[in-house]
Image (cartoon, rainbow, N blue to C red):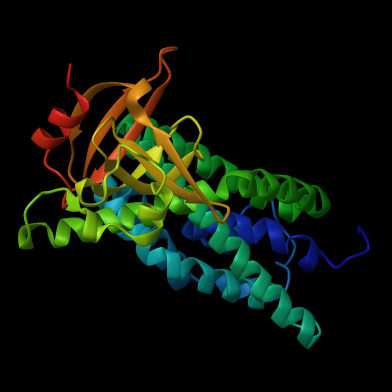
Length: 324
């Protein structure tokens, strides 16, 4: 593998760095030739980034992103927009890096870079959203941002100085990211749906949805439940984090069926349901984009259910979850 061209060795590390922090990646690559730590030419056509105009532009976007991510709703809008920008930027970065390589390598490598950048962005954004949904902590968000910046700087430095090490490190990082990517992506798209709920909140009242509005797969999951007589069901679409028996972050429906609420979800082409009767609800909190019910197991482990603003009101949720 050490015989591979440097451009191929550092493709994954740079794509991964761009997915985590695109503008810092471009800024560091563009500024690298002007520093005393890097004297040689940048691989491929990356030297095109070494211009004052490009550096000012990406530096400005880096500052904008840093500021935007201090406010969760603004960060959500920014990261939603960059769900399109990141893969395109990854492809363009790959095209610059692999300039001069055979056509198949040039095109295939650029597409791979776009896919890696997209995956890294989705995982990073999803984990940020989970932190926000659970507990909006500005200090924690700032520390995570600084850690991500340090990670990007380290990855780029390693890629320029020790390309093979950078490749091994990026492969290990991608393996770790892929293990939780599904939950992170679900969290990201659930947060986008919360934002849409906010836009249409004034067009309808806060309420549970009747049995005729439940998706067919939800009714199918509860078909054999004797506590769920046909027309008596009501429910609401939700997200759940840390719920025992479900993925780390899952989307589904909370259904009221005559007894305790049940969480119904789909996972790996199968239907699942979790009775919430054994969990104790502490409180219902209303935030800018969601209503959150905090649940605790007998062992004291916390789980969270998130309702959109178009769902049942805080009072309705308190009445359902905090009875007794």
